[in-house]
Image (tube, rainbow, N blue to C red):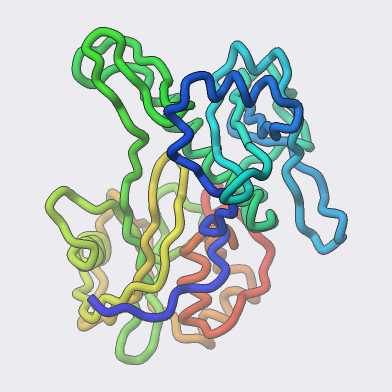
Length: 315
């Protein structure tokens, strides 16, 4: 597997916090931070955080933090880190219930909607907070005995009170790849459930006992029947929906005939740059949003950023 220069501007790979993992096991850390009004709290309700327009007026947004309050004492709270290697400001995640915010509150947005518009510190905080909240929401019971587990290590693990087993947040590695043939055409596919115009690069989870390059080759063959070589790493970013790490590659196709895996792929097509440009311009092609590594893989092939409004691929 070859390695090339990393993709630029991966929206969710811009963490600015020092995680200070050595502090997580300190007794009473969360209580100390909850007692300190200087602590900054990011509150998630149904996966959405409160945001505001950035002062610069450049289309960016910022997270709205608050000081700890009594609501946090009865919630899941996790220590995220400090904004400096020594000292600095501490940041906490507080997860509210669905009734703590109006469903259509325009001041609250999820990571998918605003991740690409946040600054480095805020992007890293919201990405980590979203991933932790999603993991805890889905792993409330012990995988060994079925008992309810409890948060520990300042929100970074769960412990079973019955068998004392420790359960750590999981991250599922997934490969995502731009497949390019010898005519420099890009392969795009429409997944089941995509909008009629929606297409993206191929992706899939890494299986046990499989290398990353092996996963790329297997997924491409399975989904579209194309054989690839020269798998080249380009970049990676967390994708906490709910718990993936997307690892981006490009690969050279040594066959071009398409045989679709109908349970996964509705359509696939090779595009040269002129065909791609026309399809984008006339609206017959909708590509992945800026927050995704898929968008950066497509732009890496295209040779420049693609200025089209962000629209979800599904729906």
